[in-house]
Length: 161
Image 1: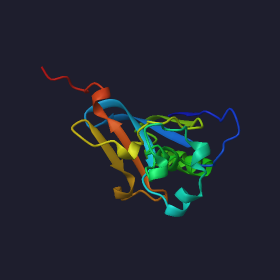
Image 2 (image 1 turned 60 degrees about the vertical axis):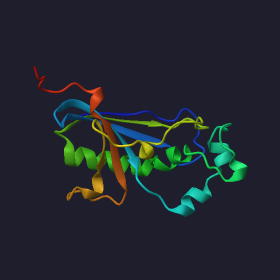
Image 3 (image 1 turned 180 degrees about the vertical axis):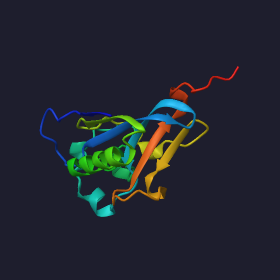
Image 4 (image 1 turned 90 degrees about the vertical axis):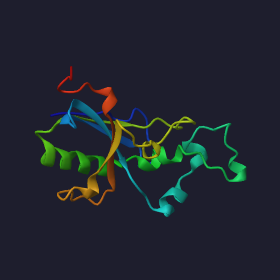
């Protein structure tokens, strides 16, 4: 299993800035499926504690004065702290070492650009789905972890004629 952790190039404005993805060797009839990991929920107090004016680029399409909050806040809230990142990586290495070919971690760049869609807002469909780790009996972490995948990005293992 290849693990790549890209360090921050500058000091981070918040601890919650690490994003993770993994590649599963075979999943739902596909090979080398990329799964983007994210936090599924967070305390309201945490959301209220961030300086959003500093963390998010201005969105000219949203009237924040009228109460419209940009969805891209969730991009930061879905990210992990360095400690959570390391805990998840160690869990995946121990639990799925034969099923995962790689794990990658990078950091968000700030301010987060306006108009990006958070992973939790992507709608599931025929090819797009979410892995809910809390439903896996062996999942033992306190982190509300989910993984988003898109099967249409990966060719089937067996091609039907």
